[in-house]
Length: 512
Image (cartoon, rainbow, N blue to C red; front, side, top):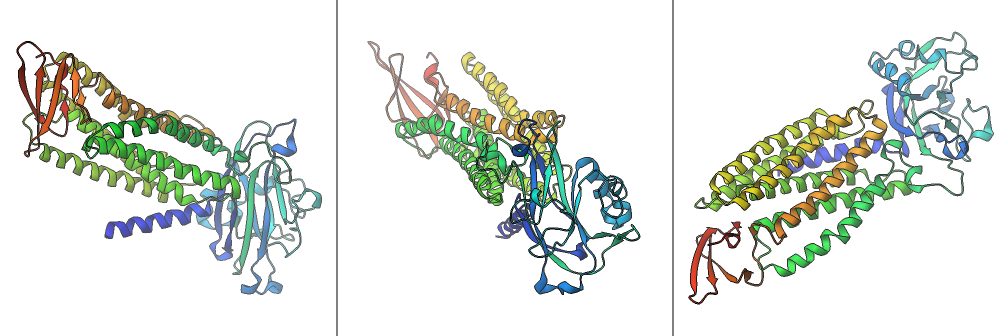
């Protein structure tokens, strides 16, 4: 109960924090806060042939909260800043000092200000709050402002996509002395801001799934949609057929097989639902991403459990219950550890330097846990192969082990490789690769379990026939599998085969 409460509180915290970094920004800001980073947004590259339709647009309303303030007593304004990474990072590093002159030293030399820097070429800020039902004082060209909005920024970059950082800072540039002052007056403002890629006044948009999206998460709707469609048309029909042909679907191998597929599907579906809603209203339901990712993590843990089941081979004369308890307990601990690392990574993520949970110290710990389970997998596989004398089964275990080693190690290699890729493409590439690998893992495990040449014998409806033999199966009360192999010769001979009931390597593939 305590663990449930802690996880619920952390999820709620991560949800509220993530909501702050949504695309459609609306909320309140108090000048006592001094500085707030609102969001980071990737603006697409401007097409020179269609500039108006491919600009990045930032527009909205920022007004004084009059019911809580005396609107007539306001004498100083604060700043709404829009900066790229090169200008924002020095300012962000100095924000703890709360020194306006130090923070704005670099920006003031190039930003336009009517009284203090008319030679400035960059449009980096708006003085706020704006007067109710009027344009902001810095908007000297009303035709450039989106209808029913108080300000509009048009971001043009013909060279490359770029991140832009939106922030509020309680600093005032005195138009008489041209010195920076920290605003000590306590007043509250309301803001309602939109950030989009494309012209908000255009009647027809090129791609609805790019308009509201930051450039670094372009194409994720397509990625999740394709993955879900592939699942519906390939693994799902196969799964339904196999369920009908099996006697005991409560078999631990089958439960693991069904569950990890189901959880992968649910996790991807929740992510897709969020992004579809996000494409519609610019906000989405951010908590669905976190729930979906946690469900996917649990699915991966169950897949690891399934791989350990197969690697163990449930060695002959080894009590199944004891081995099973240890493996399941390890699975539970690993799942809790990975979910905790994910939640911690969401809480501690740095919105300036990182935009994904994959490249956080918390996630690196989960990769270490995964490597530990990989070593355990290798150990169990080694124990199994040392007991096995059949050549074809040894080849199966060797190929199985090699493919699983690739699956265990690929996230570490992927994160390392992606650290050399620009952040604008990093997240979408990581998610695409992870989604693809999870889908391929479903196909590969399905082949391992249900291929006609498999050595894994699962309980099926009919008696198993092989090369003129019939294998009739029974299970005794001690948890061990007893099979009678009847050979159709002139003189019939019955051969009894014993093995653990949870997983029996198919002895019918050996010649007696």
